[in-house]
Image (cartoon, rainbow, N blue to C red; front, side, top):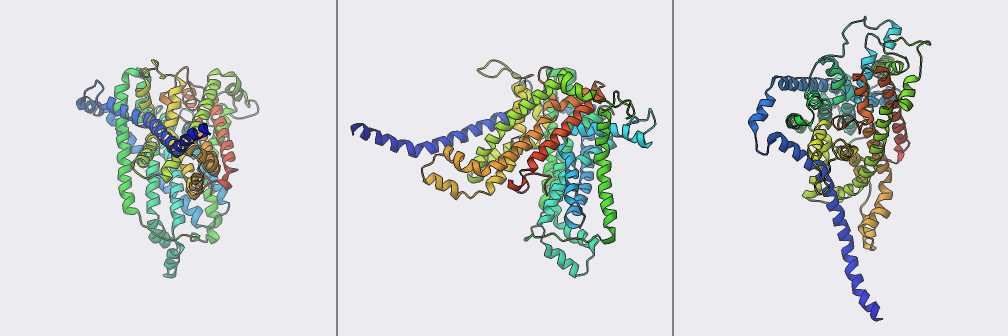
Length: 577
């Protein structure tokens, strides 16, 4: 009895404090995770750019930015970003109107094909287009439409970069505009029609003005994606000798190595400023364009009538020209023995796939490295995102908002900026440990964790939005601690969203190039940059085979995620209607 009396006060002291203590420790760990992977590297980037020798030196920074090559690269970056954004806005908006407001048939299949390029790595997309429209094109050659031998490739130019970036980013605009169109109340369109407005007048004076906020948001996404898209700018711009800021950073590291880190930091900071200013201008226009309307329901439908076959034919012809033709050229190139050979029975071979899968050591090692890094990053990010979403959804105050901003910044900025930040932060030996992770797979893992945290968080936040907190509060009232509530109550409810987040992160990270292109080394290569390395080395057929394998992986992952679509929050999968 005496022992029991002594133990009773211990129980009273332990139960009230343990849940709070575990919850506080988890929040502290999340803050440390975000600070080390987001705030600290970016802060190091800014410090190195403005004070490379420990003292602020704006004169040196100004001299670098005013150099002719920097000025030309800046103008080129802005040129291709703004022009390709305009192309993406026009195409994406037209596609959204077509799929939301018309009676076009087979919309689901068409939307899947239209959004698919967004899931394909940009370097693969660029390679497919280069091979499709080259003078030795295996597809156009069969049709007698190939360029004459020796002709300049039309895509190796500013116009080629703009067109390809516009087509690549059009699905981003499509997704935001489609969401805006679906929020519009149908009674406004019905009132316009009752007043005698035709279809053109209806869209010009009612639908599109009310959907301006979605169009502006899509333009912001397209601009950020275009200015930071290394794959397309490198594959087309470097052969065309058309420098941009992002390719200038890449070439400077390749030419001078870590000795050029101060200049790289300055260029990366300048690119960050351009991105932020672009988003700020877009946000200003977005606030002016944000017209609040109440309602919703079934969108107004336009009966295409006798024009429907022509509209559908034009829509499918667009997919054939922008998706089927490049991908078929990529497949055809991967099936011949040498680049430029015609596709016939004599030249048909699977040796490129055999080399890529079994015989080429660098490709095999890169794939295994990517697979292990992607798996590890996916598991870590899903686990972190579940706990982080809990605090972002149900906790108020400046700290959750600061965490949300930090995760978004690391994802919104061009990936190559994060790559430079990681080099600067991890180049020196780690404190207390005495070794550096620069040039190893661990720095790539750190970059993946920082860059894809926001991507993993978004579907899980959608899952939390569907949970009523009374369930968690009831478990807390019953005496369950924080970790027990997360395990027994929260995790089963958000599991489908967590699985979707994992698939999206895995699919994005496996073929990633924007972040890792500066971080790979001879001992730590990933599969994403291999396309660029193989193409630069003249192994075009092998690069095509690797590109085809990457597309197959993307399609399989999209199929796996689609099987869970019925249990996921709306909007978790961008290709789902």
